[in-house]
Structure formats: structure tokens, C-alpha cells
Image 1: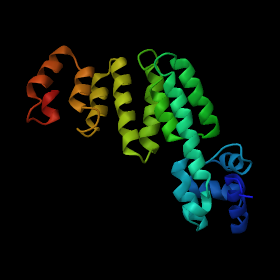
Image 2 (image 1 turned 90 degrees about the vertical axis):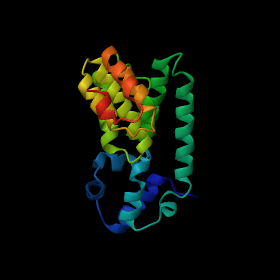
Image 3 (image 1 turned 60 degrees about the horizontal axis):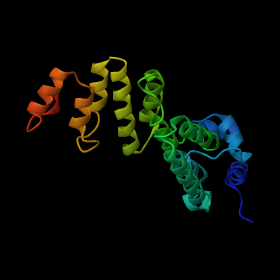
Image 4 (image 1 turned 135 degrees about the horizontal axis):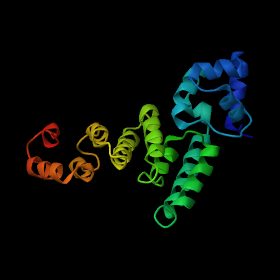
Length: 208
């Protein structure tokens, strides 16, 4: 019978003769997280997979066997279900994602989806905290730039236009129609300048 991923990690750790604390320190997580994996309470974040495989000297396929495919399918199912309620019932959508995060703690995809159902106008600090966390940790550019976009929206909701523009400036032009997004957070006068200068001028000249 195929081992569960937590059992596989435990077996590899014991074969290496190391403690949960030593494994946790090596890959930059808490030993409590390792304990949850080994007891099959939670699964590692997908971004930790290369570090785990490298540490144990095995391939990704050997480490995950069919677990990686299964995890991606479950993540897709969670996100699809949450998306169904994103507009009609954002609170329910959020609950679905937060339940998913109990099984897949700190998963970038789930956290990214969570940004969409946070109310950045009523609680911008919550969005700022999560967006900054994602920007710092994710290795996926699409997620990083999406988080920067929400960071800009939240700063704008707080009335901090300078920080909003600074966040938006970090997004490459091809993402989210950057000029349109810039216009969303600017004053009427700045919007006029942006519209008048958008052809052939660097962005820094559009928002002085």
C-alpha cells in the first residue's frame, strides 16, 4: 500500500537520523509543522517540496509519489468551490478557503484566493498584512503581482496614495493593464495626467 506523504517524510527523517527540530531548522519551518505532517494532520506547502526532496536526496516523484497530483486536485477543488461564492457570498467563500488552509497551511494559491474575499475598503490592514506576506514568500510571479495589486488597493483605501503607487510600480506593464490600475488609485488630476501622457512616456512621468 502506498505510504501517506507524512509517513514517507517520517521514514526519510528517521533514516537520516535527525529529529523533527533538525528537519524544521534545515528548511525554515517550525517543528510543530513537521509533527503535523508526520501525523498526517496537514500537508507541506507545495513551495517546500524542492527543499524537502533536496534535503533527503530524493526526487520529487519519489517524495510525493502520487500525493502531489492528489494535492493539486484538492486545491483546485477548494478554489473552484470558493470561487462559486466569491461574488454572491464572500463570507462563505472565505470560510471555504480558511478551511482549506487548515489542511494546507500557508499555501500560496489559497492565500492568493483569500485576498479576493477580504474587504480591503473596510479592513485594509488585514489585506496589507496578507499581501505583504505573499509578496515576501511566494516564488510565483503571478501571485506576487496579484498581491501587489491588492496591496495598492488597500493602501489607497487608507488614503496612502504614495504607498499605493509604489506597490503598483513594482508590477510589470503587461500585468492587469497597469495604467488602468494606476488610474484607479489616483486623484482626478493625476488621472488626467496619466491619460494625457500614457503613450510613449515612462510611468514615473505620468504620476508626478
